[in-house]
Image 1 (cartoon, rainbow, N blue to C red):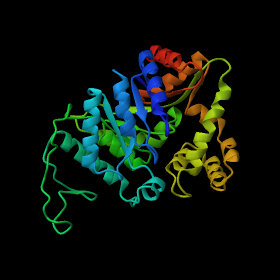
Image 2: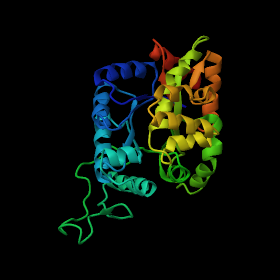
Image 3: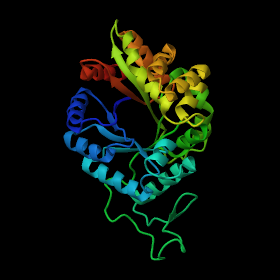
Image 4: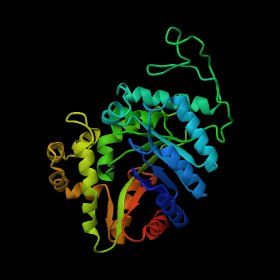
Length: 343
């Protein structure tokens, strides 16, 4: 099992690089860089590549609406080059709030668009002349939709690797099924080891049954906040604002993937109440309604023996890369201990 961490939106790049360098020395395997509608992640990923030597540098995520698939391939190749073969590209549909509100793109056919994006990126990285006729993309641009001068092109530069790992962020059954079939890795969110099989088990099994033998087994990246000690349970409250934001405010009523997920975990009434409060502007009240049991399921906070039990629970549920947010004054020491335990 690998250990990774996530850099959230708006992280100061210089502080982030210092932090990642310390965590790399402690044994960190992967750092993920988030991108919402603020700073882009490839810029920080390139800077981190220059400040580190071993850690994998992943995008989590680049949405499939704001960049063309061939541009994503160029980005993957560029990041892989400057990092010496350490790039990992996380892709996903994001959500209508960001795609339509920030990028001005219609949020249509997200599952098909993600699959087609992966197909095109892989072809481009193999330096094939890209020709694609899909539901979301036609490359070159079909006759009658442009000047007619487009022709199949292959990447001008030679990628360091002909296959950069492509991970897919997915929550819904159809998109999870697709990730299990064709992606190198899966990036779920608000992952509960106790609830995962009931929510995603069938989709993962169906997708895995169709998985090509040319692909390695699916990597699964999930985890949560980590604090180790006999008196740290109160730190679970630090996760309340984030859960309330995603369950309550990341989308609209009837169109919030994270709210749907929490309902499927068995928290139907709580999810509805959190969303109503959050959308009514009562954010603190929404945070207070986040169930303690849910906070415990999606995080690893408690005495050392308890945290080790939670690691085992994540591993046994299929997680291969434990994504952690160390809480406290010694994040490098937390990563060092986790690395020893997962080994």
